[in-house]
Image (cartoon, rainbow, N blue to C red; front, top):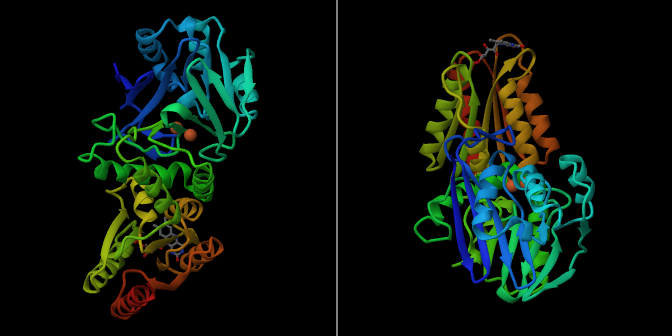
Length: 402
Ligand SMILES: Cc1cc2nc3c(=O)[nH]c(=O)nc-3n(C[C@H](O)[C@H](O)[C@H](O)COP(=O)(O)O)c2cc1C
Ligand SMILES: [Fe+2]
Ligand SMILES: [Fe+2]
């Protein structure tokens, strides 16, 4: 049985949260098996309306209904707001509507309408909400704000005007299962690492929309007292902290001295090159963070992405493999060049057995993605004395570039 939480977070506002400790790879990609994720749904109650904001992943639909029944007769739900259609939040919609007798009106972006039908076979009452539209329901005033690409094109947020609560969907969320509901000082610093990882993996490709949509929210001069996202902590003490943190990660603001060293090594040549680089970085008072992929180690790429977001620079070391870049490094390069801001200089090293080509290919790919490539060093087999010198020189070049 998963752990679930029901909490009254404000007068007539309730949180329904489930802690997902089962998913090993979020979106079938990102390693979260050691940290998990939460799905947060919210319920608003007024005299004439019962409004549900998002649901849980389908795996937990039965538990969702059990929790919902604690608060309300599901037949009394009048409105269901879908902030975006990704099934980690919309997955229980069908079951909720069945128990509800399909009475509730489903509200969302107009692009959600077809998805509701094709994902869940629901043809019932759907109402598209316009950007800035307001809806008064008894004592509640809801304002809908279109926030495209956070994280899907049809993303909206809901602002509960009278109470100052922003229901933000994926935005301002993070991985992991926090030990509290609210942003308590003792857990925020640790949790932010998982927020960074979530941004870099799940919404990194749309990072310019983080900035755009936050600016849009600011222009509306909303008096936001609480941010209630669809994953992780509810921000009550300091909602501005998570807004600022999202901006920082979206812009790739570097941590001084942090150098990400990524390498793969089948038989130890690139591993030896990584050792040379790490020693030289440390000699220059840099802080290398190392992800090495070998025949005995495969570190989580979700963690690597989080560390890439605030690295000052990166070193990437690849063996030559079938006249190309090593496949895992190729995949990591693809993820970094899509999801991480290109303000980080890169040093590329590559080992070959009979004809060097991987380094040049890798450099081309980063250059296309607008990352400055500081140097490319291709070396034969295990680095000999001459290769070692070239690796040290290029590491110094990287250090002095920043
Ligand atoms: C499966 C495999 C494919 C390889 N393909 C190439 C290649 O196409 N061109 C080349 O020059 N060397 C190739 N090599 C040789 C490696 O690039 C070379 O041995 C390198 O030093 C390996 O570094 P590592 O020990 O860090 O994995 C290949 C080696 C293996 C095991
Ligand atoms: Fe999403
Ligand atoms: Fe989500």
